[in-house]
Image (cartoon, rainbow, N blue to C red; front, side, top):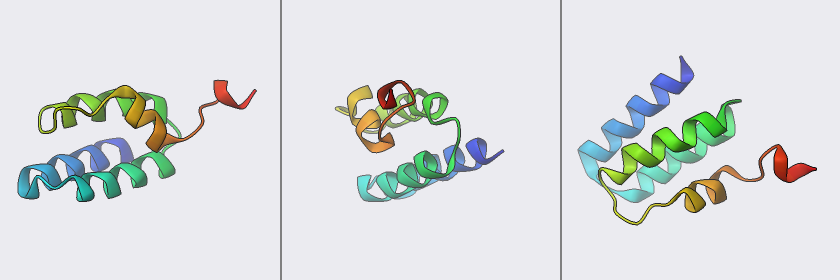
Length: 72
C-alpha cells in the first residue's frame, strides 16, 4: 500500500511541477521507509525516465544506500 501511495505521490509531483527537487524528496522518503527498496527502484527509474532523461539505475542505488548484498 505504501508503495502505491509513494509512487502516486511521485507521479503527481512530477506531473504538477516537473521539479527534480520534489522528486528527490519523495524518493528519499520511499527508499528510507520501505522494506522493498529493491522493488521500488526499478519502478521509479521507469517512471522518472518519462520525465527526466539521464536518471540511471546507479543514481537510484546512490539514493537508496547500501543493499543487503553490499553489507556482507
